[in-house]
Image (cartoon, rainbow, N blue to C red; front, side, top):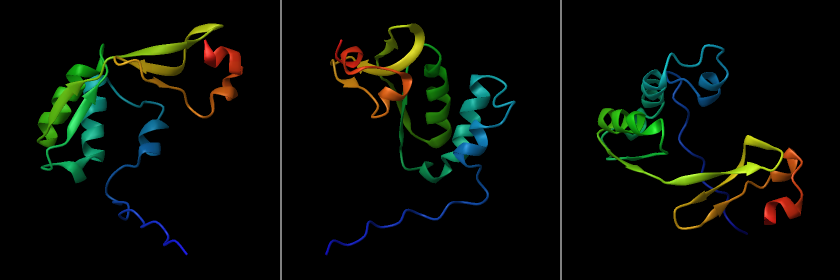
Length: 119
């Protein structure tokens, strides 16, 4: 019989959880405020030289400040949004600079057909 997977570390009660950040009506003042709040959530990685990955346009400055605050480095990931055929602002997946495509398992929840996902 296979062993059960090890449980992760216990949540830090002094740190806001991701849902508490995501469901606030006044989430962030600006991108740098978002970066500061994320750094608070990621303090367990401080001093471990984490690599913070940024997606261009708005996240590069955020990643730089987060990497500095956490004692790590940052790099840029070049990706393009895969758009829903009927709504160009709706991202249904992504493709990276090497051509690797990410399509979430739940793509059909957006009303996508197998034909849509194949194109």
